[in-house]
Image (cartoon, rainbow, N blue to C red; front, top):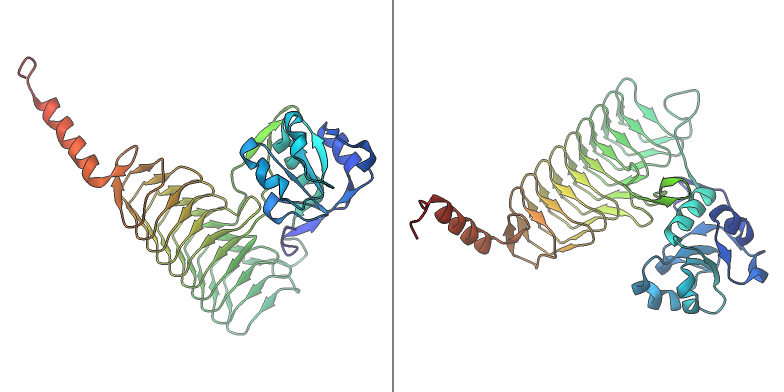
Length: 338
């Protein structure tokens, strides 16, 4: 179930209604009266949740799932575990997206006053002019929040933090001594879309952002909330200006990312990793502890712990430098001089 501090529960809904909304076929029509209350990834799905399978490699995981229902391709319905209702369709991910929008709605700041009377603000907090604080938000002692910053409903900010002007924070839990510089956006929806009945539709992003103690986020950087699970930045990690961190990313402790680094969704980064400016990492990769990526490196595969890579596509730094040196020598030769 998505965190109720950040998402309203719009359920329950019957499987018959979901089948009609999504254009799917209820494999066992007798289960049409069953109710579900939430969407979920398979690992966390319970009896009142509906999940989906869009890739056959996840069918073994489905067979072990406790989900009450699942969107699934017509050719894969034999993988449904006992008691799990199937909604068969060409695009199970589309079914999940439509069901997520039907069952969950993000909470947004509202009310007659900029600072909600339901917010919990400890003594010693300084709020600049134009600050908005949503209902149920919590702000710890000694934290300073700059002009026109927005702290969304349910957000928790620890003690002795510095939130600069024009920062927006939503769907987030933030530790102590966190520093977020001007214009940064924390907890906006991650990038996810799928084919819908009339074109592309957004996939609701139902996770959170967790910034642990001592994290620093540079000006105009973006940290997206998870698609369902959390985006997490570990203790004392330092992020430069204009860095993009996608949904579901897990960053370890004491990592460093220079300006214009881009981390795609569902990347896992170990402790002490370092990224040069304009480095980029493709999705669903693992960067090991203390790995280093050179400036403008384009990472397309996992990097083992302790290694330094560079270039595009990125490879071990010595290999890349040898290749660059060879190309330089070849380019410098006169035509016909072998």
